[in-house]
Each structure stands twice: as structure tokens, then as C-alpha cells.
Length: 139
Image 1 (cartoon, rainbow, N blue to C red):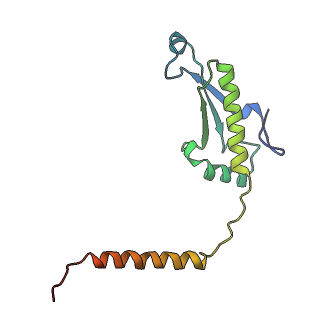
Image 2 (image 1 turned 45 degrees about the vertical axis):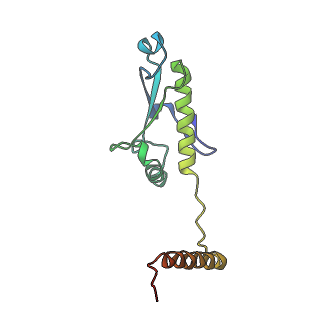
Image 3 (image 1 turned 180 degrees about the horizontal axis):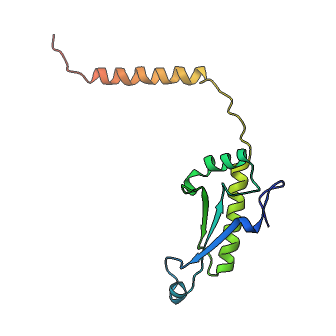
């Protein structure tokens, strides 16, 4: 079981793991041992998430989800497969908790009068400066 927040716990059967060789430096260990772990979470096939939650996750984590709706989380930071497995579990829980957290609606605000006035004054000053750069007429 993977606790996401107070109300949501993902069962282990909905998570699948793949291991592969990590990239980057690391000597002989990195060339022989499959320490990188990829966690796959099938959003459409999840029995725990309701439709609104699934849609929220799809919208907010769109860059991490493939066309089939599978969320992919990867970790290769640690030297052992078990440490990377824990890292992807933690990362998935954080991502889902953040995606499912309700957003406060944005309250529309007006540009302050002082800021508007300052902007217009700056524009006038700049236009005057450019106007003075023009050709000098001899009278």
C-alpha cells in the first residue's frame, strides 16, 4: 500500500516497476547492475481514483503521462535498486498529492493606479527622448 494523502491509498497491485541500467558515471557498477527504477501507474485502470480525480491527474501531470494514460516516474539517483524503488514511490505519492490538492480560485485584481500612471510617464519620457534624436534643423 502506498499512502498518497489522508484519504487516498494506492494498492500495490496498481503499481508496476521496471528496472534498467542507470546512465552516467559510476564505473563497473553502472555497467552491470540494473539500479534505475521506473514506476508505472495506469490511471484509466485505477480502481481507487474516481473520474474527477483521474481527470485532474491527467490535466496536471500531462507531461508525464503517455497516450495510453500511464503515468511514468523514474529514479536513478541512488546506487541500489531498493533505494530507487523507495524514491519512485515517494515521488509518485508527492506528485499525486500535489495534483489532487484543490486549487484556490484566482481572485481577479486591478492594476494599481500608481503603476498605470508610472507606465504612461515612462512611455512619454522614452518617446520624448527618441523624438529629440531626430535631425537638427538649421533656421
